[in-house]
Structures are given as structure tokens and as C-alpha cells.
Length: 432
Image 1 (cartoon, rainbow, N blue to C red):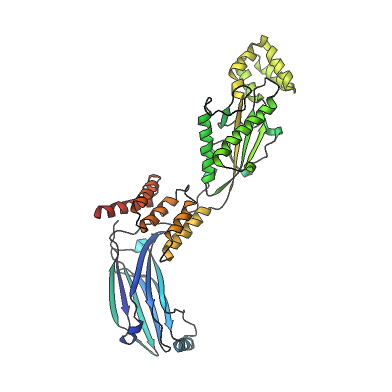
Image 2: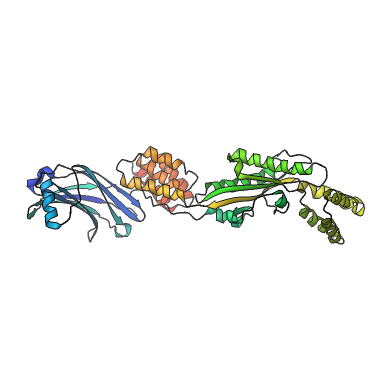
């Protein structure tokens, strides 16, 4: 809704204190947290020793006064009389430039808003007034809105409900050779050719699976409420050959190096291990391929602890026909590495705190360093809450195109506040 804000500054003082009269130097308006912030800059002179000046500022609608701020100026002798009379020391307010910020809830705003500042001159027992009015008009459209950032719920907690290998550190257990073979196989797998540990992204579904895993890691890293703690990778082999133990570990390391190259993560994040031939997958396929006697074969294989003898049993079973079928259908699936766990820990939302500090700077500082604020925002560029604030800063720097681009991107991601700001920019452009 478009509103026209008329800002009236009323200066009331006696002719005796013309030397103390104030004039508005600057004013600003900002919208945040369902409130309007009205800010005024004014200059005050040096006070004579016997004089005191009470500066009062109100924000009002035609019906009511919402908030006010008071400042005292005094000479030395006046200050002593004030303490003697009232028992308290008035707030010191020296000569020079001063800033006053008042707040009004947005539901109290009407079509006309007044900011009234007056000076009450004190000379002993008397108080005298003189009206001197200055009127300024605010822009015809509302100022840019910039609500304070709310702490986010952990997005990684949401990811953990959708992906079987994303876990909170509450469920963490170190990856060892003892438990590697019992890890659950997740969708984040890469396949290898026979007797090879070279990761080929173009082989089978490797490219798609790698892209999905990278996306999950990206989202955990971008979540301002979590810290990535560990990535566990297990390498697997098919049962044939004598170098399978070394090959499984090498495949896990190849997958680790591929992830590390793209994310620049430290070695300490990764845990790798050889998972062997993943006999659980083999047992499931045996039961499926031989419904009549597969269960008895699986039971016999489980009783045999030596993997070489286990493979020999498979080769001789039913003349080798089952082994031949397993070689074609099952063994290629066993030659892989799998990310079995992406572990994270929760932490406070540091980004929300940083963004709110920047918003406070925009509200309270008459001359904020916009370049510095944008540089701070750049640290959090992966957080969508940054976009609207970036647009507000660009707009105040008169970089309209950059502001419009930031607002449009944020609005497309569902930021209603940015959508309103985008409309303001477009309406301003149409009037120009």
C-alpha cells in the first residue's frame, strides 16, 4: 500500500534563545520488524552557563502520540540548579550534531505522520515558547523494507529425513575395518570397472550420483545452523582375485579425492575403509536367482569364514552356472565406493546474528559504510536471507539495477518482503 509521509518539524522556543534554535539537517525512514524507524539529525549550540534547554521529539498521527525522546542541554550553573531542584542530573547533551531515532508500529501508521520536535527554554521558574515551523515531505512510496532475520531451523535436520546417509553426530560411530562391511548401501555410489580404482564420472550412473552427493554436501555446508563434521566412504569389491582388500580401500580413497577436489575440505573430515565384497548383496542375489536351494547355499556360505573358500564353493555350485550368472549381474554392482555417512552437528544461527547487526547499522548510523556492509554480506552469499538486505543497500546507494536484480531473485525464492521492495523499485522507475 502506498503511503505519503509528511514530516513536520516544529521548533518552539523564545526569542531570547534564538542562538539555541535548531534546524533539521537530515532525516531518514526505514521499515523493519513491523515498525517504522524515523531518524533525525540536528545541531545544537553551546549553552550559556545559566540557561537550560529541553529538547523533546514526538512521533504522532492525527489521533495520538506514539513515542517520544527527550534530551537536555544545560550550562554549568543551570545543571547545579536542576540537581538541587529535582534531585537528579539531567541527561547530558553537548553542543554539536545529534541524532534521534523514534519507532512507530506499522499498524499505527495513517496517511499522515508527524514528527514534532520542540525546545522548552528554562530560565529559573519560567518556561516560554515560540513556534517556528519547518515542513519536509517524504518520498511518495514507502521506504525499503528490511525485517530482522529470524534464526533458521536446521536444514540439515530436514535433509536427514530425506537422505539415508545424512546423520546428526548423535548417531556417529567411527568407521573401521570391523564395521565397514556392515554399512548400509546408500544411493551415493560410484562404480568401477574390473580390477580398477580409477573413478570415471562417465561410467554407468556415476555422474548423476556424484552430482546428487555434491549437492547434499553443498547444502550442509551452506546451512548456517550446522557444521559438517565427517564424511565416511567405504570401498567394495567383487569376490574374484587376490588383491581385493587393497582395491576396496583404493576405490574409497579415489571417491574421497574427487569430493575433496570440488569442496576443498580437509583430510580430517574424511574416513575411508575397505568393505570387502559386500556379501549381504551377494546373498540377496543368490536367493533371488535360486529360489529352491538358495537359502541352504547362503547358510553354508555364512558358516565359511575364509573368503577364498567361499568363492570356491560358489564356483562349483551347480556346475558353476550360478557363479557365471553372478559374474554377469552381481559382481559389477559390487565394484564400487559408497558414501555411507555425511555427519553434521548443530550450532547457533550465526548468519541471522550477522544480518541483524547490519540492519541495526543501517537504522542507527546516519552514514553507514555501504561498501563494508556489502563485503560482510558476501561472506553469507549462500544464505537466501541475504538477498533482500543486499537489495536494500544497493537501492540506498542508488544502484537501482543491482537492487532490482537482488529483489527479483529473492522474490522468486518466496521472500514476500523482497517482492514488495521489487514493486517499489518498478513503480519508481515508471515515474522517472
